[in-house]
Length: 183
Image (cartoon, rainbow, N blue to C red; front, side, top):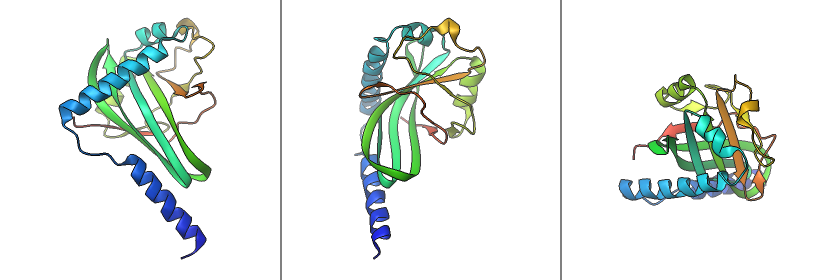
């Protein structure tokens, strides 16, 4: 077996291992996701202006633990909840794949804010919603404070992405796909 094939097989095994989960009672899984979403929102609200931004949104999708791992070939996966007026209205998974110069693993939290009823409806009615194909998403950095009144009114979907060190800027989310979970 060539070294390249061995590396590709190892990377694929790592990605599959990171994405596999043990089956869990659906009620317990919903409670687990909701608890993680509550913690992620509490963390978000520590940054200036973010609560006002979320309050302005029709709904917010919170994916608290997106795990990305790989070596040359990589993937990301996470589960979260769609909240409207502090009530969970659906559970979703997110996944993405990549090929290139990458090695290692990281965890991050993603917040997708649906700013218009039309954007929210399109997301909820889709059978697998993909950033860059089904919607254009504005990625903003919230670390320095967010003023909701200064955001462009044409931004129908806004993303905030936080890793262990803070909010991430200049991040491409194109190709990231969301699917509704049957929980």
